[in-house]
Length: 312
Image 1: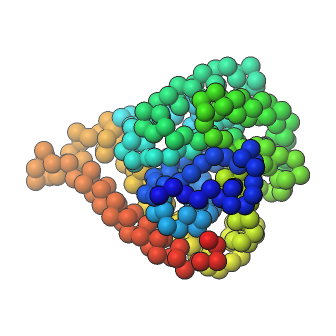
Image 2 (image 1 turned 135 degrees about the vertical axis):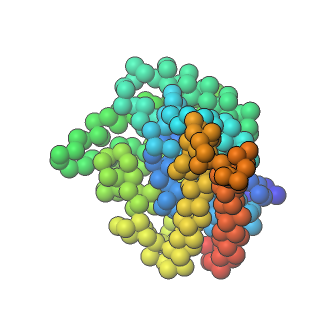
Image 3 (image 1 turned 180 degrees about the vertical axis):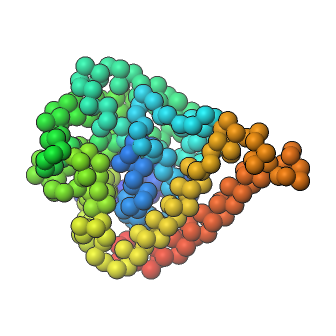
């Protein structure tokens, strides 16, 4: 079942929203750097998307990783590449957010950036054609002794424009956070250092994200995000906490601490195997015990979303 086109329902012109539709049982994946990785621990964006699609049984898989760029996604020895992880997760929709870190190299690096992004999109398209590009939010001003990163926004604007052009060439939708949050639209105090979002910043970016998807009134219905990243509405905030708890399980499952023993360069160590039968590796089986815990948490989220009918 296709999702309602919220932009059309709200009278928005097509150019004002990303042409993204969710379907029942979609698995929505997010890839990108530190801000994407941190979004799972704040839970704002996933909460908003779930609340506006209560019957779609959406599942979310955050594959963001600190330091990831379109050029490289450094991992431990033997760790699967992103394409394999998306396929294992069963991703049907992938949001890609890159360009913020890459823009620090300046506009001379734009051709290399686009070439690497093109290759990544080609790889991901073998998993699903439903790819959505997300421009990075603008850099923010912070006080001394930190540098004023807003001086780099002209470079970031060039990268955002290149992302829009790339999406246009490939016929992909864009969630344009850079345009949405530039200028007076962007409140102060949303980052730690001008680049990395605070919990409050994650809330504001999530609201901008859903506005780009054609849901401009959603943030008004959920209420404002406080300085600590909490929503003032107790029901919505309680729901967000359930999302965060589920994401903690997903994080531990998708980014195991002892990867070297699970699939890296220490799988032959005695401590990686059952002492009664060295042919048996106990660690992989233990990790799969996270799966029913994640599914149980997702069932709990589906149950709770029905208790917030005023947001639909």
